[in-house]
Length: 294
Image 1 (cartoon, rainbow, N blue to C red):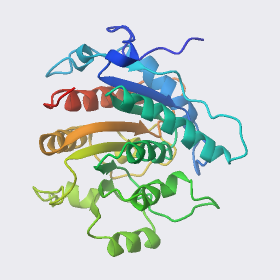
Image 2 (cartoon, rainbow, N blue to C red):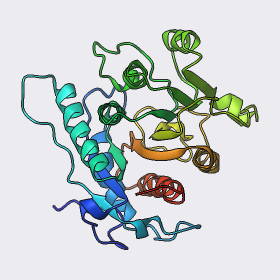
Image 3 (cartoon, rainbow, N blue to C red):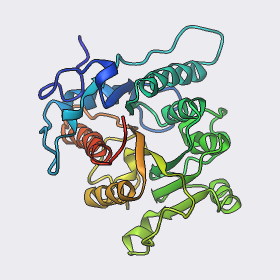
């Protein structure tokens, strides 16, 4: 069965060199530790995107051109499966960057973000990561591997990228200690503080890079909004909480890439897939409305 392109009901699949956005389906699922199904997430988002309106309420981001790359597949080799997935996704993101496009990675498990970070590092980009998630993902290892989805932000921080975490509410002492030891490069605003109105106006730290990559683990949203994740945690962000935070980030920084990860589709339940697709398009809109040179 042919994989659809993003929002193909409204836009043809734009040639790679002419598209403002490159959508990269990355169905990696090797280290999930609770509910599975994230390998089906990218296709579910692409299929649901056909139900989106081209007008997002403010503009038509798709008018700038959306190219959907073929779904990423790991190459054969002697490396571990996780490493081969990361290498393959990194190549796909690097292609988007060579085309001058904004990569939009669809996971798959959250480990895919490490691949995107490596591609930006290889391109010499000075960026920061804005991280929406229920979990801090700052463990050094989890279940015997450093490539776990529970370690992804630790690996990204080790690459030298600063991080702002939003909506977190489930993390271990090791992760709390990691935050405390790296206060200058990891800022964190837990979901309870955001719900209580304690998010400071200037929540992006002074000196944070001008360009940002937004990584959005769907379990950052409350399960009442997004039940289709492998590790749902109560007390998450509402839909408009997330939209307002994305727009606030876009008002201060230039979005040069993003991902939406950890969708685990539930058979017969359509609204989580559609919500994930709409989130992708909302991130496209936030990026499309920013002034930039191409």
